[in-house]
Length: 111
Length: 115
Figure 1 (cartoon, chains in turn orange, cyan):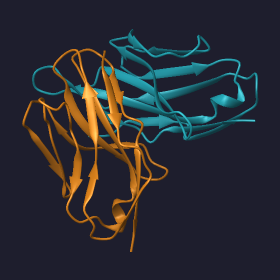
Figure 2 (cartoon, chains in turn yellow, orange):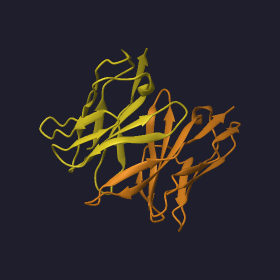
Figure 3 (tube, chains in turn purple, brown):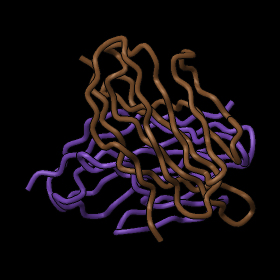
Figure 4 (cartoon, helix red, strand yellow):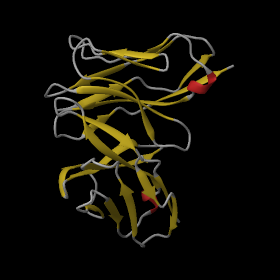
């Protein structure tokens, strides 16, 4: 079946620290992979995506590379800011099937 | 292009009542998915509608139902409300990426409180 396993949180970092949130997946087809972010009191927003192996999605300083050999899509940012405090969700989608989301990782960045 | 809209944004009901939530997808999107988000269970998939037909369904009791209209707007209904139904209900509409794969866009959610 299809599923996403995401690093447990919460994660607390100091401003300008390096961020990694691990995400691995299992899929019956050839999935697209996504990272979504949810700020307090809001819905989810698409942060970045990758649709095929070795693709790198990037946005707002965040990056993730679609690794088919390790079935992973880890989220990274070189220098986090207080404004990056949010909950991050890894997700996958295969054609005509539902989206599968990870459990979410809460990130708090302290000044 | 207008985003996904959900109404109402906040709702307070009492146990045993029923509730209907509405979602208007992005123009041109034909797929609408519903999720329940709670602190304890995270994001749980309820169901997906595509061209007025339920295409995928999560593991929720029959008290949770939905429908989609010809203009792609969707409603979800919860009957005989329980305290545990208190949650943020999120709607997402899907457009197609190249190759037929989906990308979901979320609305702001409806916060349901059951007293």
